[in-house]
Amino acid sequence: MIKNHFTPTKQSLITAALVLTAASGFAQSSITTNDLTAGAAINTITTAVPLLLISPDARAGALGDAGGALSPDANSIHWGAAKLAFVEGKSGISLSYIPWLRNLVPDINLGYLSFYKKLKKRQTIGGSLRYFSLGNIIFTDIVGNTVGQFNPNEFAIDGAYARKFSDRWSGGLALRFIYSNLTNGIDVQGTPSFAGTTVAADISTCYLNPDMKVGGKKASYMFTAAITNIGGKISYTKSADRDFIPINLRIGNSMKIKVDDYNAFTFLLDANKLLVPTPPVRVDATNQAVYPDKQIGEVGAGKENNVPIVTGMLQSFGDAPGVLKPDGSRNVLQEELREIILCGGVEYSYNNAFAFRTGYFHEHATKGNRRYFTLGAGIKFNVFTLDLAYLIPTQQRNPLENTLRFTLQFDFGSFQTQGSTKE
Image (cartoon, rainbow, N blue to C red; front, side):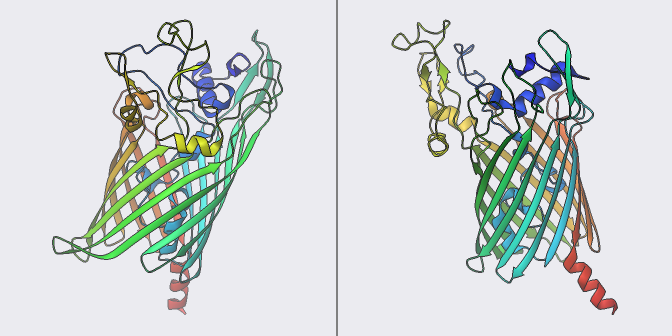
């Protein structure tokens, strides 16, 4: 395990755990012991480069990370490029900054830069750069001698294209290069390590109906579906198994209701599911009696998770070991439903100049247990928009506590319009 070969400078065990989580390829995740309590076994799905799932912009971050069907802007590439086809401006740019897990380690940060450009009435292109710094870490050998110092980092570069198929339907495609350097080439138990690289793609579709009525009020409805990070596995050593990146299915819905010419409410709901294999129950000395026809190391319940990418995506809808019942049987569907993450939020906006937002993020206790409320606000100054978000966990001493997000957007179309008006 890599934890025997590096020790961070500050919160040693905590930072080690963070790096190990980000570099899950160093250890294949699976259940190797019998369930401790019927129906309550923790079976979290882990992947390499989990930064790809972090909501990068403050607007969605203030809505419980429910950004799938949020109105399109420069940050839409992360949520589904298809939305870009409905963006109102001609071009725009966005810059976001997130001090990540600041309660644990003070130098972990995420930066996100994105832009879009409308080519024609039905076509839009965009791009983004995501950079994640894991802070300063001192690496040691197994006996504690310092062998080096390094700042682990990861980044992803995207290019996106969106096109309208009709006035209400669109499709989008994004291509992504992913780079993850967590060890700077330091040996892991005598095996040289290296930076992990891979490529991935997103496919998405968007439906927008701007001419609805709700309670006699004008309303618009948006539906989006996106599969993101469809790409090759990643590894950090030649001897380690290659691990899935976080291939994710996201379904988004939003309803915007205009109360009058100045006031509007938007209601959002997202559902997410990782399309990667669920760790199986493997036979070991503690549970071999339960699986007498299996050898130690074989899969006792669930399905093998060391499979090709397409196989893993397809089997992810029914490969969970299942929730253990008192009679010894397992409910696979129940565990699969636990893997769905729900996000919801409400945005109030006044005159398209000020917005207040709140939301909630829910993940099942056996699948990661991330549960938190979010608050945020946004204000628009002519061509600039500033958004802030604040995260409030439902549990005390949560690593995500006090997480802040900041996003600054610039609308080039509005700037050009202002310039033309002055002339």
